[in-house]
Amino acid sequence: MARRGVGTWVRESVWEIPLRRALALLVAVALVTGVVFAVRALAHVDRTCAPGVERPEGSEECVGVATGGYDFGHAQLRPAVRAIARENGRLKPGSYVTVALMLPYSSTSRTSLNDIQHQLQGARLAQYRANHDSNGEGPAIRLVLANPGATGSRWRGTVDQLTRMTRSADRLRAVAGIGQSTDNNKKAVRELTRRGIPVVGSSITADDLANGQHGADPFPGLARVSPTNTDEARALASFAKVSAGKALLVYDKPGDPYTRTLQESFAALIKGSPYEPQPFTPPADRSQEGTTANTFRQITHLVCDTSRETDTILFAGRHTQLRQFINALGGRGCQDRKFTVLTGDEASYLTHERDLDRGALGRRLAVRYTSLAHPDAWTRDPARTGGSAADFGVLRGLLARAGREPVGPIGPAALDDGQLIIGYDALQLAVHGIREAVPDGRDVPALADVGLQWPQVKGSLRVSGASGWICLDAHGNPYDKAVPIVELTPRGGSRFVRIAWPEGRPPAKECLPPS
Image 1 (cartoon, rainbow, N blue to C red):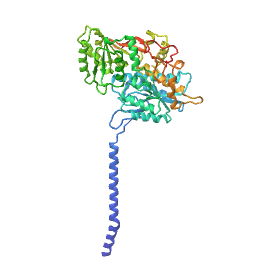
Image 2 (image 1 turned 90 degrees about the horizontal axis):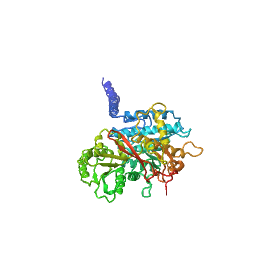
Image 3 (image 1 turned 135 degrees about the horizontal axis):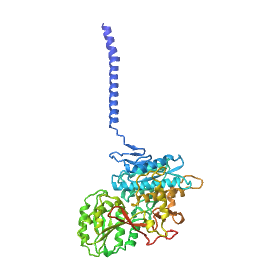
């Protein structure tokens, strides 16, 4: 028994007890590991929204480059997005290059979404024309949607994605759109062009988001289809005959790229005015209401305090603040006096704005602005040069076919805010640059060669846009571009008034910018 006890003790102490302990430890480790992985699995949140699009940490906003039929959760964008996806799906691998339409698709502003929808529709029509109505020219155009965030604050990650797409089978060759002239969009354009990616701006108008200012080209490879704020102001002055003694300037302080350059342009028009310009300070996100309505109520008192010869107010601000200002003017004390508010293309956002007091426009108040485009420009005020009803008619023909496949459907379309028209023209210009850059014997241009085409877009190589001729100067800016003067109406919508020109007259038929 003693020997068996010793043997048992030896067996248990040397083998069985350590083995049981080791097995218990392994089981414990396995359980802990399993719990850790289970917790991680439960804690992990899938941040993918769609191929190429995800929610960054700390945000519920879907940003990135959507390469499929993703509408960013907005039903009003869905028809156009699906039409683009169907077109992209028909393209043969290796037959196309990619153009990204960069806009703030995750915006929650109803007014901004209307503009995004219209630009998207215009880009879709231009894509269809490029792929089906261009006599077989190539390469084909694949269109994707790039979202830098509602305020553009997520631009860096989106730019990184676009950069990778230039080196992949996507063969990205241009970015179009961009949206408003904001500080974030300015940073995005600077970085895109620094990386050699050509950019075609649709609605950017700020002078400091353009090349050629003071002889510098900070955005190599940038082209635009819209005039600068300075050119818009010059066109407005040639139309309205603004004089220093009859005008008061109201401006955004500290401003953003759009409002600052518009303020500077307006201030130059009324240099020597007897009235001090009146500032207002909006929220950093100028789509928000803030407290500026109170400031505008006070400014209306100062408007009424001016001499009776003063009949013009130059407004340098964004559309939310413009709407507040118009509503305040509707309740001004001096209802016996008539005023005309003159402002930039941002007013087009108010074309279908439900919160605008339309009744204010019937109280001896007119609001006129420089639109980027208008459907009546070439039928009601035709010019001999600078554009034509026939050029606009091409877009009208596409729209007539847009209710059905293969063009559409693209959803309800509106032309009077000009956004569909410039979205169409921006993609037309991008396609022109891409195809002109294709070398003999090749099917696809080098990325670096596309942006080199902009200085040659003039004369017989101009783009005959639906918004007017696009003749670019050596810096990629449109020369003497047609500027429709448009007026908001009391019954809703807008009314075309007349075409104005930065040079005071249409360009010569050659459309060659002077030295």
